[in-house]
Length: 397
Image 1: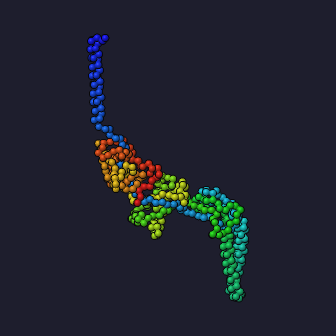
Image 2: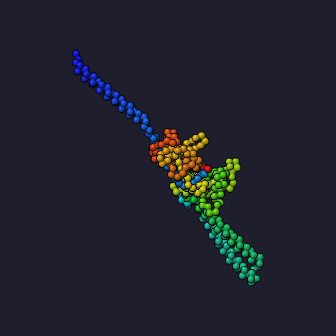
Image 3: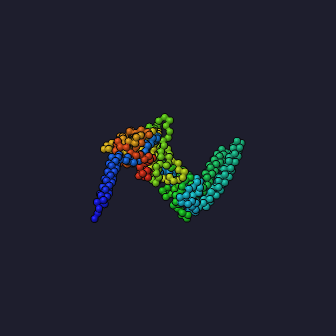
């Protein structure tokens, strides 16, 4: 049997254990109450400072590239092609020989013309001398006037025949030169449509032997709408106005890496389409701009002006309104209605509602509300990735 002393000890131990348990429960309850009463952590969001820099507004168009000079190479004399002196698609210099037509018939014609010229020269010299003799005899009344007139007429006829012989020789020599078909301009030649051994004839309706386009510069042609034309024409007519800047990008290029100048505008508007044809001139040092390529073209609407730019995803929609969430110096979020413009380098133009230096939420708009305090993670103001990778067009008219 357990003694009374042992029972008393066991009771004391049990009481101490119960007290310790109660104390632990109270402490845990206090900790839980403290945690539940603590303020929630501020959400972390991406915040960026608005971009403030000068921009140029643009009219955007679609166009095609055209050669500044485009030559169809055709023969000027008939004959057999004896040689082709270029590789298809190669660059050629002005005056470089492209084709050779058999020159032997034309060389023979030159020799014949030279012989006829020599005979005409001798005949002209003889008749001129005979005319002078006739003049002396006529002065001495030793010859009839009729005979003198015949001598003078023979001299004049011989002089005319001499001129004809000279012209015939020049024509024969020109035909001989045309047996060497040369490049009239520097540029890139197409393929040879006629190879050696074929006979060619002088016929304006026949297919050209090849074609040749200039490469140093290239045109971009595009159709300008009526409103854009009026705005551009006013800028052109302004006193002291510089040439209008035009930028160009190819189908696989991001942005507009090529810069040129507006070259010309057509003399009438197409009433059926409401557009007028315009053309810009671009330097082409690398030869990448090839006639026929599709191109994005933009024309400067005016000089550079200051603008506020933000990432497109930072602008929210509230029914028919646009807004951004501004983060102040205390990291508190405020609702701000804004007026938006077009796009520039993938960024949204803000026409009103923001000031330079202000910070806005660029990611996580759905996680914050006006009046909340946030933990800002400062990032750079970057274009919307989908637009940036696709080479989104800039500000449109």
